Amino acid sequence: MSYYVLNDYEHRGTLIRSEGRKSFKYDKERGWVRTGIMAQFRFPDSPVYDSYYEVTEEQASKIMEQK
Image (cartoon, rainbow, N blue to C red):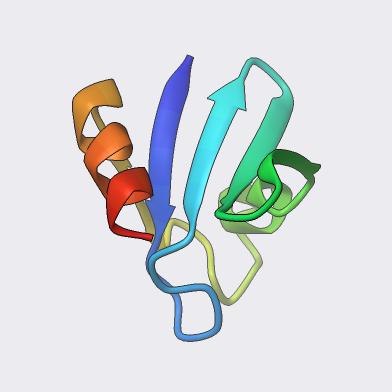
Protein backbone atom coordinates (compact mmCIF):
# COMPACT_ATOMS: atom_id res chain seq x y z
CA MET A 1 0.00 0.00 0.00
CA SER A 2 1.29 3.45 -0.95
CA TYR A 3 0.15 6.96 -0.08
CA TYR A 4 0.43 10.06 -2.26
CA VAL A 5 -0.43 13.72 -2.01
CA LEU A 6 -1.54 15.41 -5.23
CA ASN A 7 0.28 18.62 -6.04
CA ASP A 8 -1.48 20.10 -9.08
CA TYR A 9 -3.48 23.33 -8.82
CA GLU A 10 -6.96 21.76 -8.81
CA HIS A 11 -6.29 18.85 -6.42
CA ARG A 12 -3.45 20.21 -4.26
CA GLY A 13 -3.31 18.46 -0.89
CA THR A 14 -5.61 15.55 -1.83
CA LEU A 15 -4.50 12.36 -0.10
CA ILE A 16 -4.54 9.15 -2.17
CA ARG A 17 -4.09 5.57 -1.00
CA SER A 18 -3.01 3.19 -3.71
CA GLU A 19 -3.39 -0.59 -3.48
CA GLY A 20 -2.00 -2.02 -6.69
CA ARG A 21 -4.23 -0.76 -9.49
CA LYS A 22 -6.94 0.49 -7.08
CA SER A 23 -6.81 4.05 -5.76
CA PHE A 24 -8.80 5.70 -3.00
CA LYS A 25 -9.20 9.39 -2.18
CA TYR A 26 -9.53 10.42 1.46
CA ASP A 27 -12.70 12.34 2.26
CA LYS A 28 -13.17 13.62 5.80
CA GLU A 29 -16.87 12.77 5.88
CA ARG A 30 -16.91 9.53 3.88
CA GLY A 31 -13.46 8.06 4.59
CA TRP A 32 -11.66 6.31 1.74
CA VAL A 33 -13.57 6.58 -1.55
CA ARG A 34 -12.57 4.66 -4.68
CA THR A 35 -11.24 6.93 -7.43
CA GLY A 36 -9.50 6.68 -10.78
CA ILE A 37 -7.75 10.02 -10.48
CA MET A 38 -4.22 8.61 -10.34
CA ALA A 39 -4.45 7.46 -13.96
CA GLN A 40 -4.13 11.04 -15.21
CA PHE A 41 -1.18 11.69 -12.89
CA ARG A 42 0.70 8.67 -14.26
CA PHE A 43 -0.05 9.18 -17.97
CA PRO A 44 3.03 10.80 -19.60
CA ASP A 45 1.00 13.02 -21.98
CA SER A 46 -1.17 14.44 -19.20
CA PRO A 47 -0.61 18.07 -18.11
CA VAL A 48 -0.60 16.89 -14.47
CA TYR A 49 1.81 14.00 -15.07
CA ASP A 50 3.97 13.33 -12.02
CA SER A 51 2.33 16.15 -10.01
CA TYR A 52 2.25 14.18 -6.78
CA TYR A 53 4.62 13.00 -4.10
CA GLU A 54 4.74 9.89 -1.96
CA VAL A 55 4.29 10.03 1.81
CA THR A 56 4.66 7.41 4.53
CA GLU A 57 1.70 5.84 6.31
CA GLU A 58 2.54 7.93 9.38
CA GLN A 59 2.55 11.14 7.33
CA ALA A 60 -0.76 10.12 5.74
CA SER A 61 -2.28 9.63 9.21
CA LYS A 62 -1.19 13.13 10.22
CA ILE A 63 -2.70 14.60 7.05
CA MET A 64 -6.00 12.83 7.79
CA GLU A 65 -6.03 14.25 11.33
CA GLN A 66 -5.57 17.78 9.95
CA LYS A 67 -8.54 17.54 7.58
